[in-house]
Image (cartoon, rainbow, N blue to C red; front, side):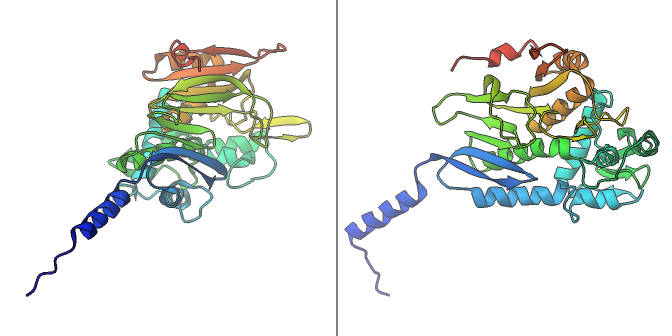
Length: 339
């Protein structure tokens, strides 16, 4: 058979085209969109726009952990009875439940993934159970408590079929970690993933520096449009989450009801702590602890945050004066670098 010999010039051209295709210059790309009832913003260094793949990953996450998706794994758990549910083929759901139980133990129950009936009762969940009174709260509290869940070798059992899970206090944070893992799997090491204010951060920003993160002033702002900063932090290879009652709340009969529910009392928290910001190695932990600290109040939150390894906390509170006050764990000054 006669061999076809390509001209040298054509060979060089084909090789050049191949090199251009395979070695497209990396640049910082920015994606934004709407997910989990909030907005996401993602910046990353890549040679390819990965927004379709990112949104596909977020959709898979929603299919696992959304309380508002009737076909999600979490919804299936909430509809189930006391039968055993094997979650070994559902790694995201399994991790959220496992880590939620761990955080509950660390915070003496201030964080509790079974708080869904109370969240619904106060109008912040996937159902609105109407007017709230002490009798209703007492009747619901019997189905609230992380110790009512039994998790053994990936198999979950609920002590009562009326127990329902609410992953909203960890879902956004964990979703940031999931997208971060997706990036690392695809060889991307410089990125900031932000979903609803929670962030997972790695590598450098477009200026070649660590990422500069603002902590919002805790001003009542249910529209989430206030962009006043209380202070700024500089960090990388960390996650950061802020919880506060200044955004998600409602007023009824002249009284303000915040979205943070104390599992012990069954009522929205009422204390001086306005916001809790947590820096941790992963955003699931940061998100869960920020919620826990809002339940606990500033003194207890400071005490626990100082004892936890790889965790820093920054707390903004008001003890009745005209000006808000700030306190923080001993490691926070290391993140307060000048620009």
